[in-house]
Amino acid sequence: MENSITPEQRAQQIKKQKEEAELRRKKRRKQKVIAMSCGCAAIVLLAVGSGLLSRYNAKKQAEEDAKSQPQIAVAALPTSGSADTLTFTDNTGVERSFVKNSSGQWSWADDSEFPVNGEQLDTLMESITQLKAYIQFTAQDGQEYGLQQPQQTVTLADSKSGEANTLTFGAVNDVSGQMYLQSGEDSNNLYSVDTGLLDTFDCSLYDLMTVEQVPMPEGSSNITGFSVQSPDSEKLQFASWDDAGQMDLTGSGRWSVTQGEVSLPVDSTTGTTLLNRLIQLQPDTCVKWKPDEVALTLYGLNEDARTVLDLRYTDADEQAAVTRVFIGSLTEDGENCYMAVEGLNGVYLQSAEKLQGFVQAAAVDFATTMPFAVSGDYLTGLSITREGETVLILQRKVVEQTDEEGNVTEATQYTMNGETLTGTKGSSFVSVIAGLTGTDLRMAESLPENAEMTVTLQLQDRAQSGASVYFVSAEDDTYTLYYTRGVDAAHQYILCCSLAAADWQSALDVLTSEQSAD
Image (cartoon, rainbow, N blue to C red; front, side, top):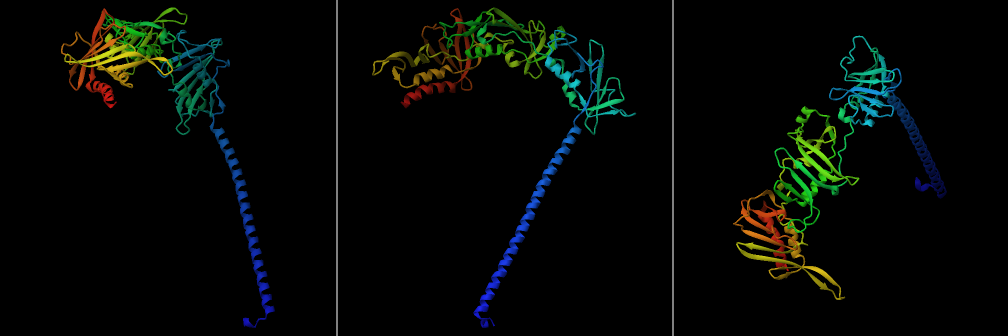
């Protein structure tokens, strides 16, 4: 049948199909626009609704927060409207009273010399005078509020009018977590307040104290000397010492220590540590104010038990001054010791690390455990002898060198057994042995007669006494080293310490391995 359609009819059919197709496309486009419009409208409505809901929720939350915050002012002050006395029970269970004078200065009612921290007292007073409650309510008959056995009582008083008001803090409500409060004598009208106020008053007398300051020099360079006297021990005397002409030491500005007949140079590192600790003796915590004899005995600060440290120095006015420190017993944990200072009123805690090294100490405890501690500037040579035979000779000298332009400079040159060492072989070896550190330092009565090895140092412009170190083999691959030290030729003492054989061999390897490598 389709073949019988004329061309004209076919053209009309195609035109009609196109028109129908166009109408269908327009209809779909309109539906899509309507859908999109509805979607956008929904989004806009959702956004607007969300914003409105957010603002509504924020407003409601603000209202709830406002309700949850204490808003009711507590009548804390006396009827006079002012207060200059604060009384409460501290965390040791003792009632404490503090008075503020017309100049705004606080003092402890029991002792006006007690150094009160005024800022902390102002904070305590402010926490009470600006106290607010969540609610104020009428007490119910038969209801327990914990006011008969209060957690805290705080009294504000006006010394001028004689009027006072007491705040009694009772039990905590299990549901609200808030605390019951009674102001004054009115037991019918109560408040509900935050429990955080208890934390504010959870302090001791010494928490409200400005710690006394120990008179101290401005720096360690102002210290001229100090002494330590422990019970049943000879006094230790430390003095600044010019070491010129002595074997021991790496430079000037050193210290000596004398105990009885013994006078020794103080190890340089030890000396620096001691001085730094002395100028840092400011206490942190007071444990007793104006102790009586019973308390002093308890802290090991009675006259028969304490160690006395006298620190001599030049003060800011360039005047000679002395600070006397008393060192007592250790605390149970061993981390601190008790300390008092002449002229101050308190017993304080001080780090045991700073002070215990002085207690029951001997002069040898402060001497050097570095037998070869000498600056390369003073060393002119070194020899090693084994069983009477010299096996190594190291020589050091300063030579002049002239460059191509004729400039003359000085250089250090080392030779070993007559051969010149190149590079840093010699200086490296001297540096390594100078740093060798022994352990278990002690004094000996005599030098050994059976030394396995002797190392002798030749020193420029220095006394040769004590320049030899004697090696004796010991157990566990160690040597016992003997050497002499003293502050002058008349005061030379024999010291000995232990040194690992491997440490000495490592020092030799620096010299011999570098030499063979070159």
